[in-house]
Length: 97
Image (cartoon, rainbow, N blue to C red):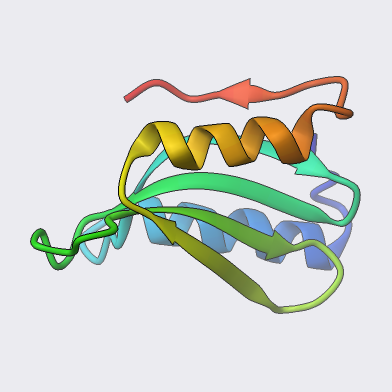
């Protein structure tokens, strides 16, 4: 899925790892797929727990240091958007928590 010999793709991989593991975990990674030059990740934000839209579809650039996200009230809504955006992609990796 990623070519870790490319600095930008390695940076994106490292960013997703930092956000989803360790003492400063910010989100729980639920699903991901690659679409051209972006990595699309469905996540559940861990802080604050009272957030009305705790799920997001996060777009991590594989060509520059940039991250964008759109928030959703439910995991199914975020997954539906991931499916819509990745329907032309041959492979999709789903990570079950």
